[in-house]
Structures are given as C-alpha cells and as structure tokens.
Image 1: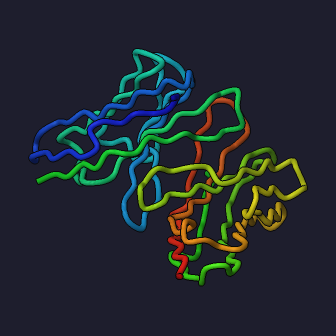
Image 2 (image 1 turned 45 degrees about the vertical axis):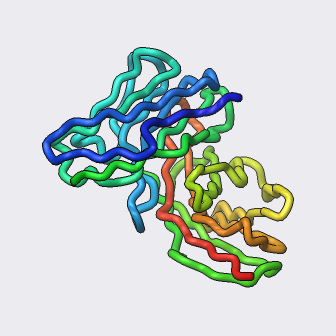
Length: 113
Length: 115
C-alpha cells in the first residue's frame, strides 16, 4: 500500500539534544512538507521541498534542519536551538502534477524532558 | 501573504443534524485551490473536499459540500446528516495555483458530534 511513514511515533528528548524524525513516502511524490501542530495553533509549516536536493524554509524554520537526498525521504532534525520543541510533527507529500492534495503521515509526538 | 481564518474554535451538534464550519481567507491571487481537511482523534489527516477557484460550482462529496463565495473570500463546509465518525478537527487550507508553492492552514475547528 502506498503512503507516508513517520517514525518514531513517540519520542522523548532531553534538553540540549538534537533529534531526527523520519519521513518516508512511496507515493512517488515530488513535494514533501513538515508541519508542526500545537493546540490552538493549527498547522504551521517548518520546511518544504519540491524536488530532490532542494528545500525552502517555511514560517517557523528556526531551530530545525532538513535534507532531501532521496525523493522518498525527508528527515527533520530538531536541534537544541529550537526553544520550544515539544509538539506534534506531521509530514506530508503531494504530487506536483496533481491538484495540491496533501497526503499525511500519522505524525510524531516529540516531548522534551 | 495569504491568511486563512477559522472563527469557530469548537462546535457541537447532535447526530443527524446539519452543521456548517466557517472559513475566510485573504489573498490577492485569482487562481488558487481551497481545501477542507479532517483530523480524527486517531490523528491521520485526510482530505475531505477540494475547490478550484476558477470553478463557480460548489464542490460536493457525499454528505460534505462547500459554499464558495469568491468575492467574499469565504469557503464554508457543510456536513449533512452528521455522524459520530465526523467528530474531528477540521482545517481549512489555501494554496496558490502556481509552481513551487505551499499550503496554508487555518487554526482549525474542533467538531463534536453528540449521540
């Protein structure tokens, strides 16, 4: 079955540590996105990538980094510079030839202790 | 910059009733897409319905329909004959119909369908 896989589903981190969230898709989509979801804030865009080896900052990129070395993969690193990293993180992808529909993973819940 | 506003943080309706969720947006673009996404308690976000701005006819998907008012920049979602499984967060979203653009989401409306 085609879809998006995020891992881990739950992650705990100590302050000062970097952590990487995985996002893999087998939908052959060109575009991939990372959103952060906080209660009452909706979804806020962290980074997005329209093509391999290229990505753009979203609205809240500070303290985060990404890479896009393969079409299928778009990992997100939450660095120690991110001041409030505890959140729910959603990865999504879309076809650039389609009508913009996003396909989402199940999300990763990061808690900083 | 584009913005999407959902003015109803939370709503509750009885099962089988009809409910309308509001969404307004701000853009200077003429060609764009609008979406409603549903996020059930299980957290997997799915597309409910999509509207292309150049189409005057309102989109419908079974019990879900929209009221798209382009001049007023309004895009409301109507759920008819609501079911318990409709309980979820609903997000309105906007995307310019150009290359290399991103989707902007509203803050969401939490909808409770009561038995």
